[in-house]
Every structure is written in structure tokens, then in C-alpha cells.
Image 1 (cartoon, rainbow, N blue to C red):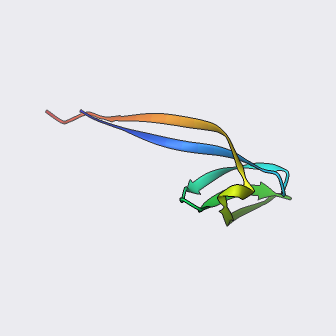
Image 2 (cartoon, rainbow, N blue to C red):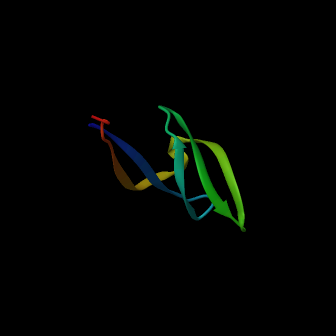
Length: 66
């Protein structure tokens, strides 16, 4: 049995006044996906441009076929 975790960071972007998710978290900048005016955007933002407000952790279990 293998177990691995998937972490999704929920962020608030003050300049856009909306919430989004981090698609790729980097040391200084991250790719953030959010929706503004019914348009889905994916941008590279400086990590100081958003606030991580929550973290969702999914546990995935793969059972061996034995």
C-alpha cells in the first residue's frame, strides 16, 4: 500500500479582492489560478502579492494488487 498527500493552498489576493488556488508554489513567486469577472486567470505572482488563508490536504492510498 502506498500513501501520498496532495496539498491545495487557498489564497486571497488583496489587489484583485478575490480568492484563488496555488497551482505551483515557488520560493519567491508562485503560479496562482483565480476567477475575475467570470474569466479564469492563471498568473505568476510574487509571494508578497497574496495571502495563504487555508490549506486542504487530500490523502491518496494506492493498494498493491497482491
